[in-house]
Length: 153
Image (tube, rainbow, N blue to C red):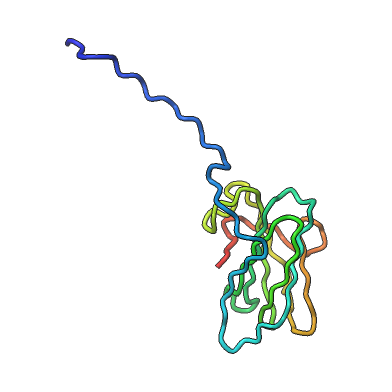
């Protein structure tokens, strides 16, 4: 059979995209999403402090009602940032995820996501400022959590 032109070249393998190519802009430090429940007092402070010497660049903190598991807030922070958010008084389940290349809420930080969940409730009242830190600094009672189990909402 006669050929009618140039031979067809085999498909070229494209290089794998750089991991940073998937990254999207991380929210501004201290940005907080909340579920404003009517009738709640929203005057109990929770301070989150992230040290500067962690191997991760960004952190997200998920706050859920301890008894019901209902999402209350998500806080976005970078290394070295301290922020205080006001929440209703009560007992909360805290989970944190960290990484360097933010890829959005669905993927978090991709394969580089590290996540933890507090092993006991964090109590918030308007008279006491509860302070939590990074689970990597050893001051918190947090257990590792699968990144697939970490939920922001």
